[in-house]
Length: 434
Image (cartoon, rainbow, N blue to C red):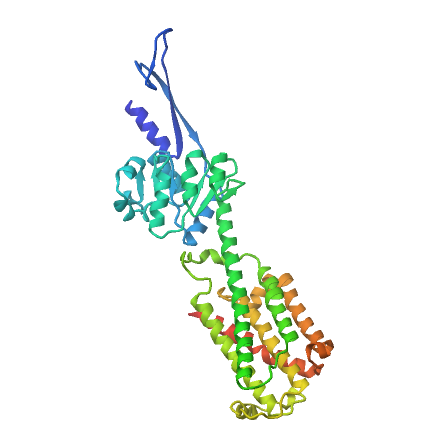
């Protein structure tokens, strides 16, 4: 028997599942089952069979991607400790540095108190010889440690854990009970689908943040400009129809542009955000307020400058006069239709270039590189905005309270407002180099 136990251990260390075979000749008319168990047992051992269920080729890479993304993976299995550890080693979860601190059996897990387990639960990697309810208990203990838990399972016994987890993932060939208890069913039964789902989810969340960043910056600038004009008794430089066009840029075109961005594999290098984290984080809030207030100061300065100067071309712009007129709150000469058209176009173009900054937000990469990655979507929307602004100013007339601008003024506006993008590029370069 010693040799058999040694052979069993060898098979288990090779991640094989083992089955033992034995027989007994049963005499007719004699009861061999009492109270649900065998009685009068006299089995003759025949031998053992080892069954190999190899790990899929894509699993180690998928596990590595999840670990790089800050996702802690835990194996909960009914297999023996040797089999479970070998499977963990093959997928890159169990290493030579791991000890008994990173492993428990179902019997040990059941005997330990919740308090003792809470001190050890985050270090646990493998729970072998697990019982049906161990998985659910593990989920609830992890949640007590403020962990967001996702559970995979395909059997009826997995249903309680799938239901208790924040995200339950059942397999396509699993039982109907497991599928009903889960939130998502993985049709191809592949662990790599989980890493892809995380990448898509994080990328979508990042795209939503970019859109909010872009939209809130415009809202801060537009609202403050209108409020300042009201307090100073100045007529709003942006008409209702002009604001509708600006809102169309924000809510439709920008949404299309930013939503069309493909998933970025770089998000898998980020650590998970906290469950109670706000969608507008500190870097976003800082960017919204700082950029928005800079736009407000610049636009307010333009209003003051146009009020005290008769501008028929931006070639006449004088920086000294711009500085002097900033704090001159007298009525001035008011704003001519051409000056209003200049102001409207400058306002839109500031937001246009800031859209590229929003696209590159939190990526650590150049906005031009980002644009090359999705030229067909984002670039097309950018061209629509430019073309739309040109036709509105050129043909809008009384409806938009605008007059056509000279081509050289278009060139000056596009070149001057592009400084928003260049400043953003410099900031991203400096941030990346730190």
